[in-house]
Amino acid sequence: MIKPPLTILLAAPRGFCAGVVRAIDIVERALALYGAPVFVRHEIVHNKFVVDSLKAKGAIFVKELDEVTDTTRPVVFSAHGVPKSVPAMAAARHMFQLDATCPLVTKVHMEAQRHHAEGFEIILIGHQGHPEVIGTMGQLPDGAVRLIETVEDARRISVLNPEKLAYITQTTLSVDDTRDVISELQRRFPSIRGPYKEDICYATTNRQEAVKSIAPRVQLLLVVGAPNSSNSQRLVEVGARHGTPRSLLVQRASDLDWSTLEGLSVIGITAGASAPESLVNEMIDAFRDHYDVAVETVSLREENVAFKLPRELRETSTAP
Ligand code: SF4
Image 1: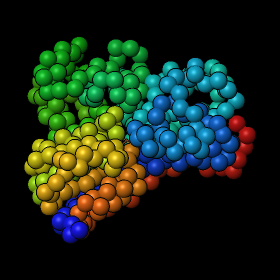
Image 2 (image 1 turned 60 degrees about the vertical axis):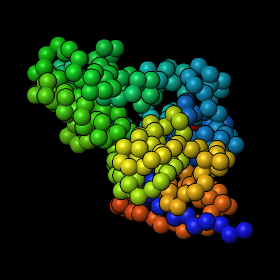
Image 3 (image 1 turned 180 degrees about the vertical axis):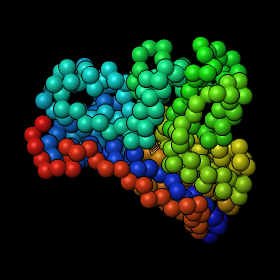
């Protein structure tokens, strides 16, 4: 059978960011040093494939610490960060805790604490219910951080003192949408204090920029990622806004509906920050079964960010 030609534009950078690599390393290193099981509070990163492979190695995922049945075992907190109450509870139960919070999320936590210590009211731009937002709001007493999501929210919010006001953001938002929300806040509250350096992280920004560069050239953009992954969802939106007629989130190649994928000549593929490269390769291989595929990598910039592991895991083994 002669297969029709298909060009796949592969966006770069894509996939794993430094925070995700570090979080997975923390669980794997804890398993290697201390043996199974290692408890992990929440999905370590938002990807079922990653979670399932860690489960197979001996990680046990729990929603809350009270589900941890053996407190002599290590417990890891996810890359999204946790409210202060979580390490406090772990300490009260004498648990051996390992914090996989991404250092770029910790940076936002520290900004929030600094603003609060200086008597500023804080507006957090983010998505309600996302674990990172819950973790960031939980750094300070209830009511100290006010959450907004949209320009409309920024237009409506009333504040105590416009001269003592600061904003912070979730790390995985749409760069463009967030710029609009910040502009509205700055219009209404010209003295509002912002981060010294963007809160939206380098990985989120780079992946969105890479999608913008291929979106106008492709008939379909596939974002490999999970439905609960904020940065993956944003990539789908960025693709749709920058010229791709169809922009879809896909978890695995087996989720593709081939009846809707006929007659294509150029598609784009990217992956969210928590999606492993093996799933991208699986997707390309699936297209090879149907098309005569040529892959062209469109590279926007190189990334060379890496974060250190927690000290306990860098040193040689000691029993927890
Ligand atoms: Fe850290 Fe950004 Fe990755 Fe989130 S997406 S884990 S903030 S590097």
